[in-house]
Image (tube, rainbow, N blue to C red; front, side, top):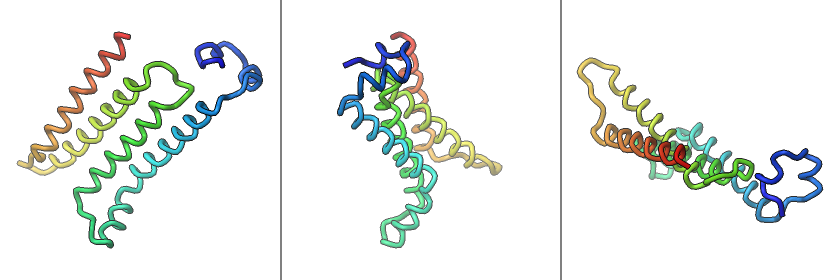
Length: 144
């Protein structure tokens, strides 16, 4: 069984002849489903929240949680993408932290549009925490 690192310099025909193992195929399918589900959940968080509200379970704050869940699903799919190789866990955590920081910082800036308004302290803490985690994971990624 050849790994991606061994087949990097070969053609697509060589990779086709060597075959794809069942675990690689299952990992690729799971990664694709996770990326698609995460992307859909980020885009359709409002629609999912409306569905939950009709069932008596929705609240406005859940849109933020649903989008963060979509970002997490997307990061899981990216971390298990078979063609990327390397440290999967670090890559997934770095990807999630960076996207969560970007999303929470965007929310924080959006709430500061009015005069004299300041975002929720939990939003500031969440954005700062994810920003610190992004720096730590980026440092670990660059040290490898």
